[in-house]
Length: 218
Image (cartoon, rainbow, N blue to C red; front, top):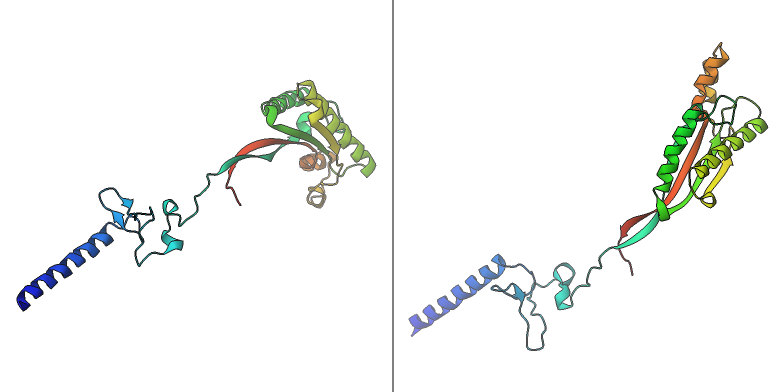
């Protein structure tokens, strides 16, 4: 009799070990009892998921069992994105002038085409003129405004909606080459002007709506 009990006990222990090994080997959904043939969580008569003693809701919780919140797919939203095109005044104008050169007109045609390609997503365009430090503040401010307006008018002439384009002059307020060029003590004024060329420019800032994916938040 004792021998029979030992055999039965040994068989039961073996079955438990096999069951435990199988559960660990096929723990595709940790913390839950799973039907290995279908990989589905076993449920009781109330359609509730069976959880094991090792269940960790924070780590293993499943949406299908009501133990985790469903992740919401990111939604597409439109955000304004700014693109800057910086044009050298040497290309656009002769020195100290606000009349467009032929090369300048060609350059602005390309800019206008790029703006028009934005279509209905275009928010606005800001044209900003800058000068070097040569000349008075008042003169440079006026020159930068004239150049900015010239560029604006040319872009509009190429088919960009006028209500979308603004122009502003900032004179020498953002001149960055002044100290470097003055320190070189050029003997010829032409060399000084060439050194200061980066400060003479017109920036075209294009703002357009761009689609991006954003996670939903509660």
